[in-house]
Length: 268
Image: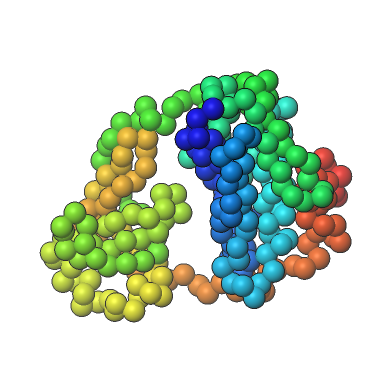
């Protein structure tokens, strides 16, 4: 087994945890996975820990939920060919490569969740083969087959930055729901209009805008750049997350037990 393959396997697993965490959608308990230590001795092992963005907040329930989602999701995918509901299309190749490495170079992958209610997850060659078949069944096309293309349309996103893009002055960067971070190159006319009608402070306030123009997509389908022709402000009503949080949402069950009962249909 090559150390490079092992590290790629670890990174692939962490992407699953990050996606599961993202699906929980609780910005008040945000955290990041940090690699704490690694050993290249056989068997290769890595320890990752969850660090809260805000040290004053206990993120333990969120961490346990993310772990439970990964454990249940991978097991159901292997045993029942059921894709996890939290797994988006763009992350499917990550799972595919994770299983493929278990068939070529890595004999077995073990994930110890270090949570008493979640059993050790083991992916051997048999399970990797089953998982790979399941992935290919739910994702029959290869995104890399999608060629580069351009189109015209509008994309909505939050303003994040103003800077330079490939030596072109004064583009803005927005964050979109589907494609993440996208640079929008403004025409000279639009730069003048944008500078007169908007304040730089709007960037730091995460102003939501609609950007219309020529959309440049990379091979695989990801939006790479927008040559902007029009900009419009979008007023988003304030959203109070605390107003809808329900501390009794799990009906007294711990997060892992609640997810298991929900999946098995034991909750009314």
